[in-house]
Length: 90
Image (cartoon, rainbow, N blue to C red):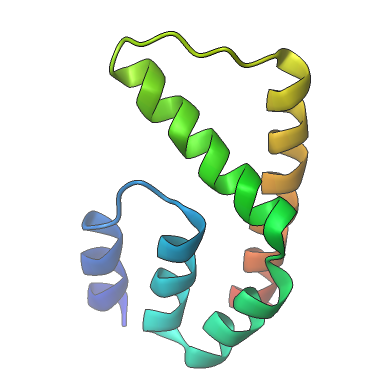
């Protein structure tokens, strides 16, 4: 199992919502189903949005984002990470 985890994480980039769901599903199909059901649009948008911001910045382009938006994304992404933690380590 450890080898599988290491291999999957080594290949994992651009952690958009669908990719996170796919990664979890590669370990346990019930985790995929649970996250698909609970990761509603506002949480998917936060995950995808922060990845898009990161990619835009890394390519040297201007990002018109406010600190309020980033804080909102952070709070929602923290909820997603907490949910994933509960799935993986109940």
